[in-house]
Amino acid sequence: MGGVRGFYDGLAPLYHLIFENWNASVAYQGSQLAALIAERWGPDARVVLDGAVGIGTQALGLLGRGFRVVASDLSPNAVQRARREAAARGLRLPAAVADFRALPAAAECADIVLIADNALPHLESEADIALALRECFRCTRPGGGCLITLRDYGPPPPAGTLETHPYGERSWNGRRYDVRQVWTWRGPRYDVSFEITPLDGAERATVLTTSYLAIPVARMEALVRQAGFGDVARIDGRFFQPIVAGTRPRRG
Image (cartoon, rainbow, N blue to C red; front, side):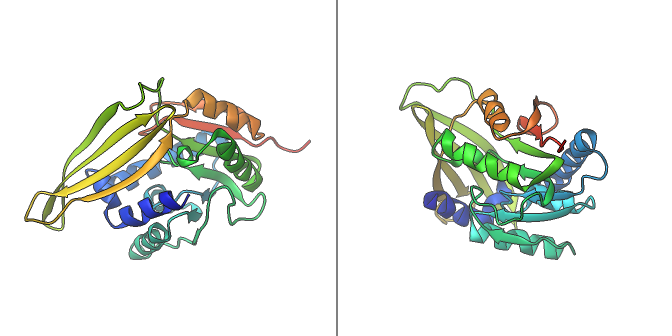
């Protein structure tokens, strides 16, 4: 995962440029997740373990709605920024640097374990994803839940296929940027080149690379069940990505 760590360390200062309005996205994602948690696990589910916190997009939104969030991420730079963003808002966000295959949390510590933003498919194999999901199960209290968000992958195109995914023009601190992703397919995995190009002056583009496993949502649902979660469901139309939700059965 060293390459993934370097990717997000480099992206951390600029990650908000993915969003047309990052603060609005923080508020929206927090409201959507809060509503979904209340519907599936009730109003007393208030402790969230965010195992891929990034710069805090989901965690900050949940904190702003009164949840208690503890967090971790593979990227030290992302964790540092998430902490700073929380402090700037007068919020407390305990956050550690960790791989989500070994979450730095006690067993059954959280009402909800969240891994958002297509983070699990960074792993090399389904076996690695299964290991991470068992960690999610370990950290979820009986009766609590797990929320995974990921891209909706169809069958992979032929190896060597290039796809461009533009975010468009972004403005920040008086500067304009063009932001896009370029995907290069190589079987069931694809490499991503994330390109942030200043449109003012002669500054060079920031280009960061990583890769993903194009795991279908239905397969992720099956792995969530195999990890021990019940009532597993795909949820569409509530978030910017499909959600796979599962509940840890109560004892007895």
